[in-house]
Structure formats: C-alpha cells, structure tokens
Length: 82
Image (tube, rainbow, N blue to C red):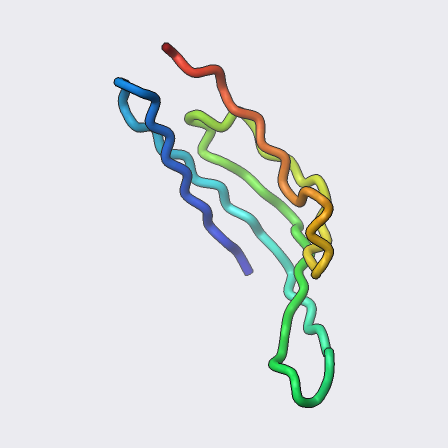
C-alpha cells in the first residue's frame, strides 16, 4: 500500500541531507495473458516528504502503468546553501 523513497543530497564540500518521500497507492491487478506473470498497475492516492531538501512533491499523473511518457511525481528542491 505504500512505497518509501530515500534521497541523499551531498553538495561538494557540504554535509549530506536526507529526505524521505512516502507514496500511498492502490494496487490494480492487470491481466495480460495466461502465460504471463501477474502484474499490477497503481493509482497514487497521496504523497508526502520530510521537507529537508525537497521543498514539495506533487502528484503529476496518479495512474502508474506501462506509459512512461508522463511524470508521476513532480519534485521541487530547496536552493543549495553553497
């Protein structure tokens, strides 16, 4: 029901900052053919971050399927302090 992504930002000569993004989603079974492995598509329902270096995260396209031409998450980063 959720995926957790961890991002580490290390500016040159600076300390490492870590942010976590949590993605809540609904799984949708997807049937291709009897001889194919089962697959799942997802619907992203909510997303949030710890807001250390990532200023915001928004849902761009909530439907996760085979179409990789659309951005699912839109991230905005804080300006680096260097």
